[in-house]
Length: 451
Picture 1 (tube, rainbow, N blue to C red):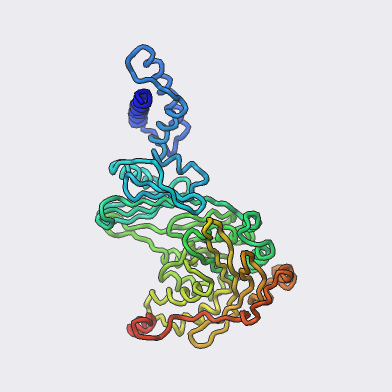
Picture 2 (cartoon, rainbow, N blue to C red):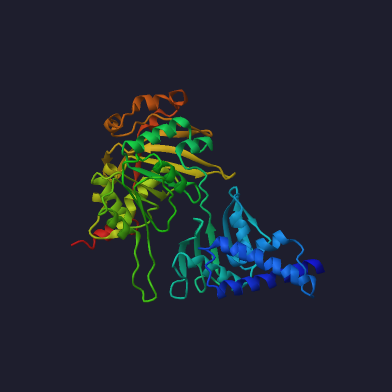
C-alpha cells in the first residue's frame, strides 16, 4: 500500500512539473499533442535521475505514470481511459463519486472517483475547444469534444446539488450502407433500395429512439449522395461525418454573456437555402425548424433529417405537429398535405435489450391524405427478427428510372422474404392526435392568433 501511495505521489509531482512547463512555454495540449508527449517523457526521465539521489517517491510503473500524467494535462483526466475504450458508448456523471458508462447498451457504475472541483475543471477543459460556456446564466450546454463525442452539462440550481455531465461518444460503427449490412443492422436488399432512393433524390426521414443509431444511419445514407451534389448540413452540434466532396457543415451557437448572438437551428436551415444546395441534411429536427425544412423539401430540394420517434407512423404524426410550434399563421390544414407531398420515405431504427441496433421498418408516403390523416405504405417490416419485404411501393418511380435504377428489380430482390401474412397493411394511416378537447389541439391554439 505504501508503494502505491509513493507512486501516486510521484505521479502528482510529475504532473505539477509538466503543468508548470506547459504554462511557462504557452503550449496548447490540443494543438500540440506531440510536444506534450515529449515533454512528459523528458520530465519523467529527469525525475527518475533525481529520485536516485534524493528522497523523492519512486516511479513504480513508468508507462502507467506517463499515461496518467498525459491524460491529466492533455486529456480529460480519469475519464480519458473511458473515452479511449472503443467498447464504451457513453459516460455520465451524476455526482463526483458516481461515474457511469454504457457498454453494449447496458450501464455500469465505474470505480472512478472525482471531486466537485475536478468535475468543474474537466468540463471547463472540454468546453475550451468549442468556445461554449456553462454558468449560472446558461446552466445548460451542448458541445462537441475534439474526438467528435457530444457533451451535455447541467449545473445547479437546475440540478439538485451536483453537476450532471453526459458524454455520448460518436462511434461511427458504419460509414456506408454496406457496412450496416455487415453489422446486421439492415438486410442487403433493403440497403440496396435505400441507396437507390438516395441517389434518386427521394426525401428521407430517419426515426428512432435514443441511441437507436439515427445519426449513423444518416451518415450512411449521406454516403450514397452522388459526388457531384453540393450538400449543406445543419446540426445543433457537429456530429455528421459525411464523405461528400462538396459539403458545408453548420452548427448552432448559444448566446454570449450579454444574451445576444444566439444562432438557432431554424436560422441555419434558412441560411442553407441561400448556399446553392443540391441536398440539405438536418441533424435532428426537434422544434419549429421542421417548418422551414418542409418548405424546402416541398420546393423540390432533396433532403434528409432525423427525428426522435418510436415508430415510422409516430414520426409522420410528429412531423405534422412540430411545424405548428412556429406559429406564424401555420395551421394543420397547411402542414398535413405539405408533409404528405414532401416526405417520401421514413426509415425507423430501434435498439433491443442487448444493445443491437436494427432497422425495423421502412415506409413510404404515397402523397395522399384524407382530412387529418396521411396514408403510409409499408415497404419493409419486421417479422420475428428479420426485416422482410411488405407490400408497399415507394413514390416517384420515374426518379429511380431517371437515375438508372430498376425499381421493380430492387424490390423483387426481397420477394422471397415477402410478408404475405398482413395483406391489410399495404396502406395505413398516420393520424394527428385525437380532437378530444381544445387543449389537445395545438394547431387550434396557434390558429387563434392568425391575422
